Amino acid sequence: MVKILRFVKKLSLNIMRKNQFLTLALSAVFLMACNIDDQTEDNSSDSEKMKDPNSYTSEKREQKGNSSFVVSGELEGEYSGVAYFRPFERNGLHSWGITLIDQKPMTFTVSFAQTSSEPISAPEEGLYTLGINPGNRKDDIYSTSFEYFESDPLKRESYSVGFGETSGVLEITKSTEELIEGTFAFSAVRLEKGMVAGTIEVTEGKFSAVITR
Image 1 (tube, rainbow, N blue to C red):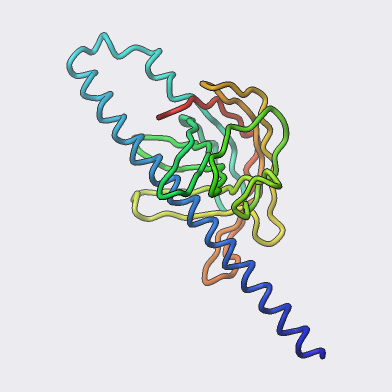
Image 2: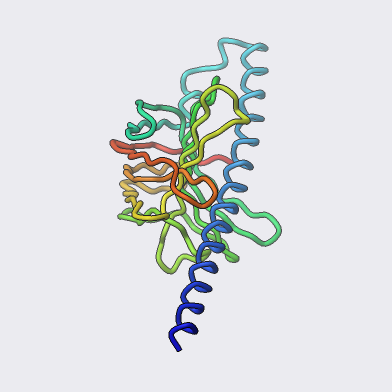
């Protein structure tokens, strides 16, 4: 009987880990799609600026929102960049998320995302848990990741919330159809071969994100 219980416990842990990695993979797909769209928008903005430099106003730059936060632990530094949010759907899979990113050069991305088989609406004002979302909105958990690019955009260090004793909180202080503002803080780990290889703390996080389509 003891052996059976141990087997069931081990099987449950393996299933849970697979679900966690699947959720993170889905969030990564969402983030990559957003980044591709953002790069396309950047190229359009550059072309517009070359045609008429005076037409590229500070107002257009501000349409990308802003964000800032402090990282300590395995990485150290103060980061700032743009911020946007968007609903996303592909092949029946719905995602909704907030992306923080700097550009030229790109040194980091932060993603708060949810995935579901049904459309997802923007969050209302309030507190939300950061971790690993099981693929529904029952717990209002936002899958959260931090990616750091030191010199090569193809080489990255990825940190995730929800493994081990990591946790975090996202507070939405303003939520409209065009603008979402809030604050955040979380701890995250970098995994190598399924084991924790590094830990970071993200504090003093704040953002003002605009919708992107």
